[in-house]
Length: 223
Image (cartoon, rainbow, N blue to C red; front, side, top):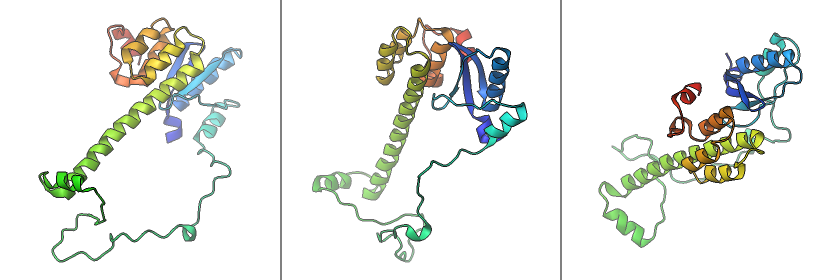
């Protein structure tokens, strides 16, 4: 199964969850539901981004699968430079010949400009300045990755709530709690929402971290 067909998503009919799973399974479930009742209004959400997925469900099952399998079209007007138009890489000393006995660890030598107080602090650290700087960069990358994941989860929950819960009580307050990373506050404001909407919003926002006294074992199993 292609990546497009296996993309995890969830379909809602009004404010009740209709189906969750790979895109192809959800799409065919939605197709069957709308064929039984053409007035059925269904929204399909990407489980990663929380955004609505537009589906073309015309024709037979094979036609639907074929359309879903197509790669996304390139964005119109986006220009990609040719190889001979790419700028030349800056000369930073990284290509200089290594000295005899220098370990080949992929280390690149470049100039670092710091204030005197920074050099003094580095001089007092064990392992030397280079080791300390590498460690600081690795820590910053890990911390930055965690922050990006939190922002992505908040944005996904926001996209979903905006599409389906905009007229529910406590919507604005729920958004403020979401972006304040206030899990208990978010759970409090969505407590009166339809169960499926509440569960999915909290799942997008906090994933497996969504544990609270107000969440029953049955609700956890449904996710």
